[in-house]
Length: 69
Image (tube, rainbow, N blue to C red; front, side):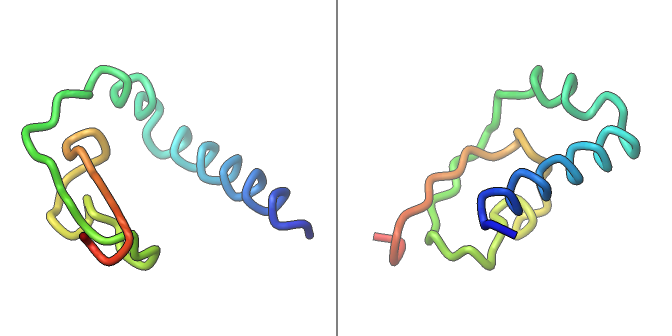
């Protein structure tokens, strides 16, 4: 499978699963852009910033850069 097709497929599967598990997820997320925190961190693809600090999507502004400089 081509890599871009894989990303589209994965995104569709994720969106479908989230919609089934939490029907209002996207509607709630669209109202929630008022974080109290800014996280400045490395661009490490293995780490999800919100998970590190126990926050949900929309609760943390994230700025990521290479080598955290």
